[in-house]
Image 1 (cartoon, one colour):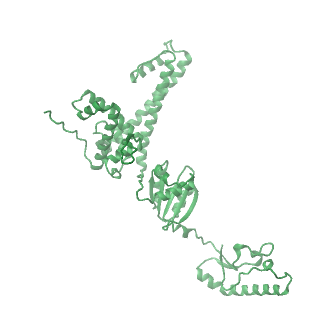
Image 2 (cartoon, rainbow, N blue to C red; image 1 turned 45 degrees about the horizontal axis):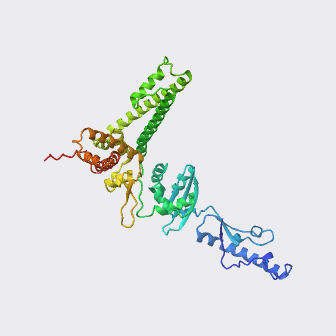
Length: 438
């Protein structure tokens, strides 16, 4: 309901609000009656004019004294106008038209919205349920939406992009600097809205559903491999309690499995055999699942040109090449190979001050899965370098000065730079030509 005040009418309260005058004074009663007649006459005269002036489709009606007055006869504060408009027109759309930037704090079920206009004035602060998010943004004109690159962020970014909005994802650690004081949903949404407008902010590229599907295979394989390791460790520990041990590696595991399967082996009590048989069955089932996922990863690797080019780099196999290709769909988001290596966390962490440069261990920032794959691949290259030192002169010289694992990290850094170069500029890996001995 929108109240439309009529110009020229007095807003002086009547009834019990008329002070310093006795309530039974006949003059006061006559004055009130005359003003009521004047009000009815003016409203009847100006009704068409008001409706045309405000272009409303509602019905202009006169408010009776019973509606305007409370128990003691005094008018309520929000009904001080003589006339009122009854219609369905909403001002919510006019407010939404002013929104230029929105900070969206996402979660499982509760979402917080913080929107501002072009003048950086707060327009909307609202909490939404999960079922209300798409309907809320569908009613808005296209605007800039900022979110933290956390769980489900890529899904919401894709859905909001379909609605015509411009979505940017940011690392959560970069947004944290803009939280003013206490942490809550409203403060986080306000910090996101502030951070997304910074010109120096680093943004995360939105992944497609296909990219996420390929990376899910790597994450699932990694989870199954951890479960396989847990089963092997449990099997070894239980059998060691009975004096049964085996060598490290696959050969030792196969030996233990053969002991578990041999029912004639008297070293295992009945209850112990019943327990370790379950572990052996679980180990075999997990191994089968890992094999099926790796087969699918190899199929995708053969159909991906970038993945096949990455495989030519020493130390990067099918798993590493497919993981890098699925994670980095657009290599141009990195300015150089060093930025790519720093994103993975393979560069020294700095603690410099006062013009004195102090470098520590690697930062271990970014994608730890890619970092682990590159470091493990570097270990395999170093083992070959020890066997053929004349073929890997740079690594041989480095191993003579630095520890093995330090050289492995340095080689992983170099492998990351080469991977970025192949993705950004094309081509395949070419081994450096060895200089002829003098």
